[in-house]
Image 1 (cartoon, helix red, strand yellow):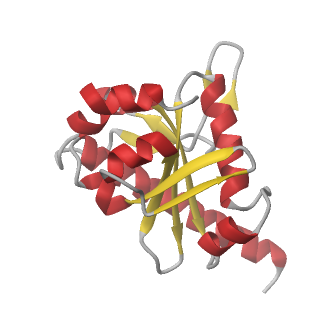
Image 2: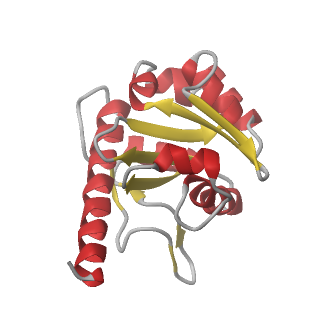
Image 3: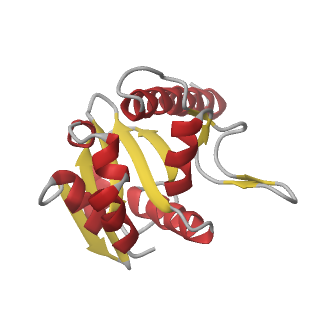
Amino acid sequence: MTAKKKANRSKSKGNAFEWVCGRMLSKWLTLGKDQSQLVPSRGSGGWKRRTVTHTGDLAAEGPNGEYFRSLFVVECKHHKPGLLWALLTQTPGKNNIQGWWEKLYAEARGCGEYPMLVMRQNNRPILIGLPLAYARFVARGEPFLTYSGHGIALGLVCWDDWCRRSPDELLHGRGLKCLQSAAV
C-alpha cells in the first residue's frame, strides 16, 4: 500500500471518529434527544478568519452544543495501537498523547476554554483526556490513568465514566467550579 493511500485511510478514520464523537457528546448533552448539537468543524481542526477563530475538531450546531463549546475545545484522535504505551514511554511529540495535549492545551488557553482530548485506539474503548483536577472530579476519585511530566498534568477517564454523570453535574454547579479551578 502506498503512503498516500495509508494517509487517506487514516484521515477518513479520523473524520469518521469526529462524527462519532459529535453524535455521542450531543446525545449525552441532550439526554438522548438530539445527536446534532456538535458536528465536525468545517475543514476539521482549527481555522482562523479576521473576525472569527475556531479551534478544535467539533463545532456547535445548537444551544447545548454552543454552551459545551464555550467551555471546551475538543480534539478527536483515533489512532493505531500503542497509544497508552507511547504516553508512558515517549517524550512529547507531534503524534502522541503528550504532543496532542500540549497543542490542545495551548489552543484552549488561547481562547479561554478548557481542553478535552477524546481518543480511541483500534479495538479499545474511548478515553477522554482532561485537566487532571477535573478528571478526578469526573471519575469521582482517581481517573483511569494520570500522567504528569514534561509540564503536563493530564487525567484519562473512560467514556463510560463520563456518561455516568449528567451534563448538569459536569457542566454546572460543582462540576463547573472544579473545571474553572483546573489550571488553564
